[in-house]
Length: 511
Ligand code: NAD
Image (cartoon, rainbow, N blue to C red; front, side):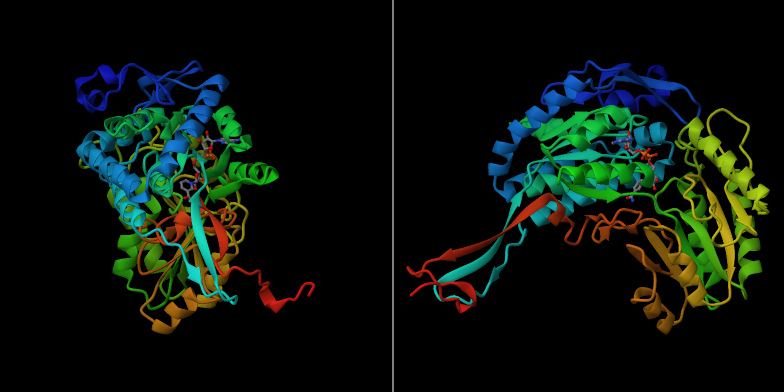
């Protein structure tokens, strides 16, 4: 076990052991299968986590529901104070938690730290929200009546998360759900269970210090079986699901079947349009991170570059050079010189190989990369492919690896058409200096994505805005803006203090 290696002493700083319990319902207790957590950088086992049995899930759901009663009674600013303390506890553990994310997920340390910072930022946002959660009063048409809108917590929320943001996605949901008065049962990805245990321990420490039931933030490590339990469970008033479009679609249908609420954050197939007038230095700087960063394992990774014919050759050749410049810096994500870490699993490595082979078979040209790197762990070269039609099924599919397709366009309108022709609708960007083109891009006939950028990469969102995408990305929104509404139910309330019954629309009923 890597946990015994002093090089990874941060694991013990987080309270992790060789064998860990992956279920928390106020008590740590698990009876399900044992999951081994691997480091994608070397394929070695870090430590083990015992996952949830069906009975363990049941205990979590019951405990969470029980905890909800007292939690929902706390005033929102008091709940915000708890979330503030969680933010502070995360600040204290920033380094070791970031290191754990880097070791277990495989992203480089600065990005792993950034992910923990994102959770901290959401705690700050949620703290402010806890004192400003709105409720509107509308003018009533009836004398002596008040017409108002009251927001109440939903109850228990099921949070199912993907492997690639093992801290932030839980944080986005949890911090907001908590200030809104909800409790949660979290099922993390079964390939990042140690991160989930470490995060839950941090949250637990704050809850315990404040005499709040731990089941306000229950954890249920497990696979598809536990995910399916959450999806079918009527007690989970909202299912917030982050993951692939294929699974998300099943989740959406199942939750709808029981008229539950769902928040879906699914796959992307994000494009950058390079206009003829784009600042190419800016573009290349952004595209390197957007296409190759995180080894292509962000939902917002740029997978298509739609490049104006006037600058096409220059962009492809300069991007190939930029990719060549980072190959020597692919390696152990915990080392400071590394810019790109490994893919997360052997299955992802196979997915990469299959896509590259298929692209070549279909007449695509590998401009750069295309190979698995021969070393321990799951490393691949960032890859640029040209020559495939804009609408080929391969180009329209999300492969979760650092592969970018370059496609030539004659003008912006064609770029927008290609941007919008994929089934996903998460993130998009245009590089241009033209004001008219910017407004076209953000207007009704522009990008149809949830995230529409100008002169920045498709990835790397801030928490202040609402995050999410349209179409097969699921339509959900998390984080800032009015995303809190997902976690509350709205009642329209009319109060009559006039002493007489008056009907709306001045309807007279009887004498
Ligand atoms: P995945 O769909 O394989 O798994 C996501 C989660 O769903 C995991 O916790 C998994 O155990 C669980 N799960 C699997 N089958 C289930 C079922 N039948 N019912 C309920 N839960 C089930 O996704 P992944 O490989 O972990 O993550 C990568 C995908 O996630 C990519 O498509 C990426 O674009 C997407 N993603 C989207 C966002 C976003 O905000 N839009 C963010 C991160 C990742």
